Amino acid sequence: GENVEQHPSTLSVQEGDSAVIKCTYSDSASNYFPWYKQELGKRPQLIIDIRSNVGEKKDQRIAVTLNKTAKHFSLHITETQPEDSAVYFCAAVFSGGYNKLIFGAGTRLAVHP
Amino acid sequence: GAGVSQSPSNKVTEKGKDVELRCDPISGHTALYWYRQSLGQGLEFLIYFQGNSAPDKSGLPSDRFSAERTGGSVSTLTIQRTQQEDSAVYLCASSLGHTDTQYFGPGTRLTVL
Image (cartoon, rainbow over the protein chains, first blue to last red):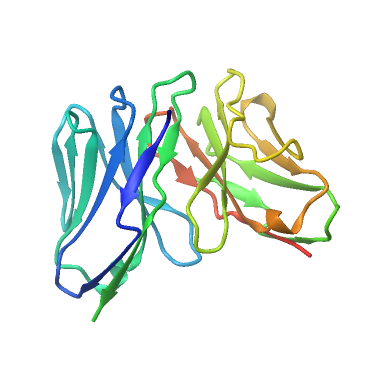
């Protein structure tokens, strides 16, 4: 069925370290994988996305990698800063009857100064 | 341009009352989603509208929940006979198509006493 698994559920790093969040999905036909960041008390906002015709995409300190064979994708944040502290959600579009976006359960990232 | 808007921003109601939550998506967006987010939790999918197709109601937790989208634009989520466990933030999101960026509204915080 439609499923996106996300790990870890919580992640604590020191400022300047890297953080990696991983997601797996069940629908081999999925072709769009966005990542959202939700700061405390605010709405989720898109930070980066990747489509199935590329394997990696970078935007400054943020990168996303996609392995379609293994059906997993990852978010990499380098040189973490305290303002990176938030909950991060991965998502994948499922190509079933409704073609809807399914979210992972979220990762709470804490960056300690 | 204007983003997704939701009203009211906060709603306090008594157990057993009905409530209506409103979502105004970005103009021209064909896809509209409702999610529920309990404190510190992930995004629980409720219902999805795509264009003129029949909505995907598979996430509605009970028959007390219903939603409609009039004229392919504004959507209303109705919760009948509210229960305390319905207390949460209800988020609406819209996107141009199902593989496009979802833009979230600010949410409605529902408290059932």
